[in-house]
Image (cartoon, rainbow, N blue to C red; front, side, top):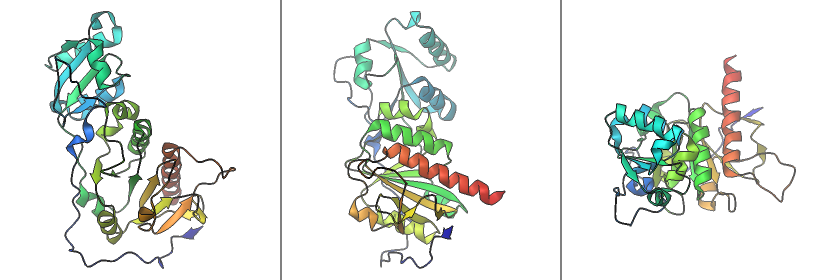
Length: 286
């Protein structure tokens, strides 16, 4: 397989060499529809977490960040919720029993429980840049919470160091994202930014190669000798990567498919790229 060519011309600029520091969007963790009815509520910068696996992972990773716990009325007769309640109480957490309608406004798929955390995993930008090897993701226009959740779940299991998304036209860390990610949100920092150019330039300067997944790529992901430090850029299913994002990539890479009329789901495409990255790294160590 051919190595990523060192002849790629990296973008240059006259900007300051000060390391990029993403501007955090505290609204990224809000629920799909914050409660407006009378009764329990939560600040918009708290994360609403649903799903048993996601709730368990919050307990494991940042228990002191949990500020509020909701269980639906009648939880005493539901074995899974009774077990959760015991854990809540063992940690000294107060339980608010609320009508199911309140939980429905957090997310229709709440399963009868929600916890609210005032802390979000933060990206250690300097550590990402200084790492000898690492994988980073740029998600360019993922608006479906199911897709983002699935990507974060895979990213967690594949050791991705961080994810970057645009501030506009992309889903934040909603309750549904937490549930689908099954705990992945607690392990993979997600940063929102208004501009990919500066952070990607910093990553390139620290040794990362930036590859964009595109059906127009001349080289297959399976024919690429993936570098130790790599950024995968993934676009939305309908539009793919924006032209401005493609221009920031060192190379566009395709995933083989038998039909040109269809496309991979964004989370599936990401999983393929991350799996091939992990496979190549493992084979190089053998």
